[in-house]
Image (tube, rainbow, N blue to C red):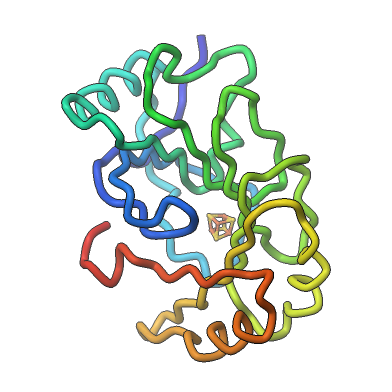
Length: 192
Ligand code: SF4
């Protein structure tokens, strides 16, 4: 049996990508294998939990909330997932993951959102969606993946001063219709 280092588990609304607007239980795992300079996620703190601990908490939050999804996020959640210990077996909720794409993802995950970082090529063979945080200097890299056989999102870069390069992201999507715009809906509606 494994233990997992978990930062927080909470119920909110998915703000990004294909499931934007969907109620979700988020399991935020601690730790990441990258160190992106713009990272604003607290993934350094956490408590050790067993799978039973996690499933109990998630089950409580999902009770009476059919249609909500489960989102495994981080940090880098794939650091702590195991092929031989499927999570949420018997749960009916869709299991999604938000990953930087540098590590394999177990087959028991239903929906894989890859947000490539630092121009590293994802190792995930078949992402369900790609989500690029838009930086103009990365346009050649982003365009190199425009033929990927999945939905591809462009998300404005949120700066530390609270602004974002929304206009540049909008202009890029208008000029490159293989991509769709994703805004951080949760920030607009004031939820986590
Ligand atoms: S991959 Fe994500 S969680 Fe990890 S350092 Fe980069 S932005 Fe932060």
